[in-house]
Every structure is written in C-alpha cells, then in structure tokens.
Amino acid sequence: MKTAIITGGGQGIGRVTTQYLLTHGYNVAVWEADTDALTELQESFTASSAQLLFVACDVSSEDQVKKAVEKTLSHFGQIDVLINNAALMTVKPLDKLTFDEWNTVIGTNLSGPFLCAKYAAPHLAEQKGSIINLCSTRAFQSEPDTFAYSASKGGILALTHSLAISLGPNVRVNAISPGWIDVSAIKKKANARADKLRPEDHSQHPAGRVGQPDDVARMVLFLIAPENSFITGQNFVVDGGMTRKMIYV
Image 1 (cartoon, rainbow, N blue to C red):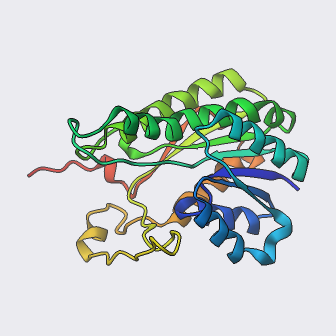
Image 2: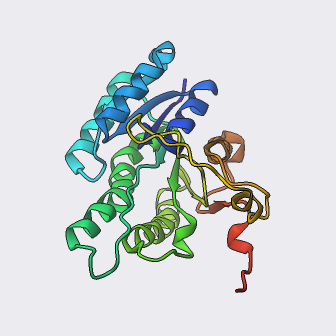
C-alpha cells in the first residue's frame, strides 16, 4: 500500500484530502502543528486508524521535519507522496506587519515545503514518487495587505519547477493553485463557523459556484496517479475561472 504525507492535514483542504487518500487506498501520515486540530482529527478517524499516522510537526523546524520523516518511515516503511499543504496567512498593512510575522509565514509556507522535500526526496525517489505543493492564485494576484502569504506562494511556484527539474525523472513535482475554496466549516471546533455564502458569491465565478475542498482533493488524486506520469513541473489553477475574468468598475 502506498504512503502519502500531508502537512497541515488537520483542517480545511488538508483534512478533506486526507479522507480522499484513505478512500483511495493510501496510508496517510498527517503532519500538523495545531495539536487541537490533530487530536480532533484523530478522534474522527478512529475507524481508519490502521491507515493513519498522526505526527505533531511544525514544518518550519528542520529538526521536527527530520523526525517526522523518520517516524513516517518507521511506521509505514516507505514514502510515495508528499503533499505540502500547511500554510499560514497574516493580513496586516505594510507598516504594521512585523519582520517576525513575515518570517513566521515564510517559514511555514515556503521554507516548510523546502525542508519537507529535502528530507523526503531520497525516499520518494525509491518509489518513483510525487510531490504536490499547494500554491495559490495569490501567487498571481492579490488582495490588500497579504504581503507574506502572496510572496510565499510566488516562491512555491518557482520552487515547484526547480524541484521538478532537479528531482526528475525519479520524483515528479507539481503545484495546485486554489482560488476561493470554502473551508469555513472544516476547521477545529473552536474556529469552525460555516460562512453564509450569497448568490453573488457563487455567480461571480465563471463556473457558477464557490469552490469546495473536494475540488482540490480530486486534483491531488489526479496528479499523483501513476498513469499521469508525464505531468511534472506544472501548476494547476483550481479557481472556477476567476483568474481569467476581466473585471471593469
């Protein structure tokens, strides 16, 4: 049975992707820095416990990433897929954003995927495996005051093709850039608040609706499938067409 690592797997897109991986026959190592989210995930997936490993891991820490790789290998014996999903966002005006806040976001969103790829790559190569980096449409466009997040996702885009060229042909590397994906209710209990989406929220999308985590999870499964082995170094935008829409005021 193949083994997938997913970082930030305790909430949102990561949590839904974990479920998709399980139902498609993968062992899954969930690496999560939020211990409350990790505990709640563990409680909700007890029926599938044999396929799951729960690892408390801050991906911005080199030591924790190395230990998480070792723990995953010890438990499952191999690593076939790495999904770099963990991310933070800080929204602040430029004059209010501290350098520590900047570094925290960059550490998780960009340095984290680098560290995970660095230490998982030899084991992925043994399995002719695959890396999926969760990028964002914010790598190409922005709302105000998202400096660190946008910069980190722009870095992920470049890191993806750099890894693909450097690790091929033994490891394929691709990115997924979600747009508006409604994860408001798929969070730890303390933060779960389902947004009341308006008709105009859906209608502004050329696809006619706001995205769901399942839209991203299905793309993950497509890209890691062995039959799609000719795809590497690419970024796939999953945004209902919004980045192709010209808006005039």
